[in-house]
Length: 552
Image (spheres, rainbow, N blue to C red):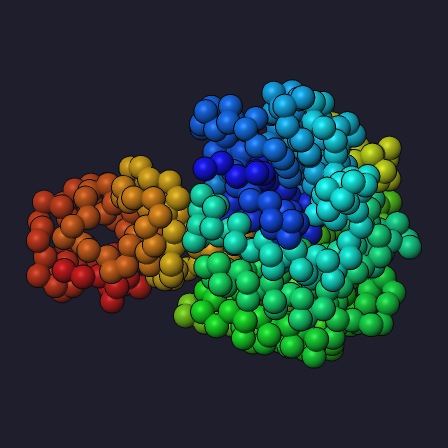
């Protein structure tokens, strides 16, 4: 039996919110809560599901209400889903025109661009009944009450809707492997100075913070619905949660963070993942002692393999000044040092918490020297033997209302941008991956997402490393695997235990120190009684870290 309403997940990606699979954004769940509060039965579908099933698209006109959430303001490359395009939004809108109440909301209201390096166009997608302005759930509630489709964030309402809408995760195609993005705050503490020139988070105003009780009740409801994976990702700086100091760089409140993590773990005693996302490196640099204590609190309360994403954007002081960026290169370097001091300790072979670095090309003030300074900074990080989990390099996507919309260097240094990106991938990323995930590192609970002669999977978490397995493995298989080789942005792994006598020649050649010729020789001598017999054929020192993980 068809429901009264359907929520279409067009996926969102903002500076402080991710909703691309396996993530599900808070927008989806609170929209579901508004409908649930009014006893309106609700279905859910992703844009990827609609792309694959034309009949499902045709059936949209059978609903009374169709709400779509979409919008990307920080473009990225996605593995498990592709955000809705403007063409798709328009096609769905026109198809529904005059047939149902169709409502479009989310960061798409700020504008749309197909990719980084181009200005976003501030235009509503044609055909839809109306746009949901502001907080989508609040705007929907106002509209269903007979008012204008506008709403601001009021956390008492938000908390109630988040609980009521938790069950919607059961309809996600990845369920139960769904990462629930949790909101702890919205808005930017640097609004008074204008914030970073390119960022859309200041559009939400000064920070508004949720109470711990509201967050934990949402987690409890999600846990009841079957969720075990959570990320405190919907906020610009998790270190400032519970801070009362004000200013552009609020002082961290370790006690508030300790209570938050403790209450979440109490509400979700069986959780498998609890990660964070954004941390302002300026907060660490400005408040080293309090930040260190706050980071220690996070490490004590989270699950291992976590990443603190630093919005560095540029190491060029001219670019930093021209765009009012959060920190200069020295401050970011110090922040990287402190996160390493606290989080680089390994648990079960994996670093607890590492920084990630974001760079943006096309900002005002950028010159050829900018890319040189960025590379020098990364070399400084590497030479200091620090760990960085990942480097994200993208081109500016400026939105109307930001200073970067009018003041930028778009298209001026495209060749230099691509050269810089390629050099970082080869000279920094691959060596850093070897440092973070040395051969012999075991990764637990990798979920296979794509099956083939080389299957691909990831762990649940913040920016999980992509793992290629040179074996055909069914999708949704959950497995432990060991690192055997490194790429620029991914690693090659083999299932643990390594079944030497069952691996084919193609898989055997991925063993470190094993050539294609040696792999064929290994296959010809099967079966092996034990590791001693195997090492008579393969004597390479490189395989020694794997011997204890092999089974014969």
